[in-house]
Length: 40
Image 1 (cartoon, rainbow, N blue to C red):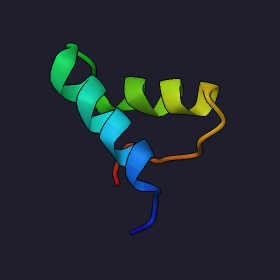
Image 2 (tube, one colour):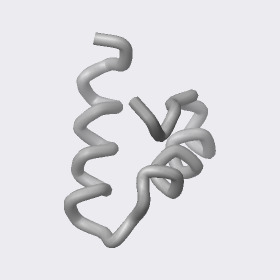
Image 3 (cartoon, rainbow, N blue to C red):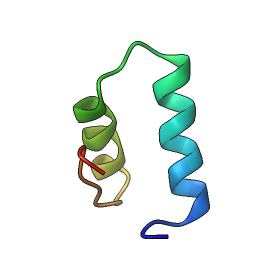
Image 4 (cartoon, rainbow, N blue to C red):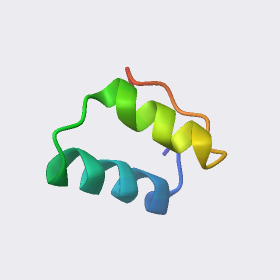
């Protein structure tokens, strides 16, 4: 795994619960200090 399980679960939860694009999730995670790329 490239990212901790908690980070992956948070991204999946946001993606499933809200009408967000992967780029929005990338920005939200960056605000929380986690560097992710929307293509992963």
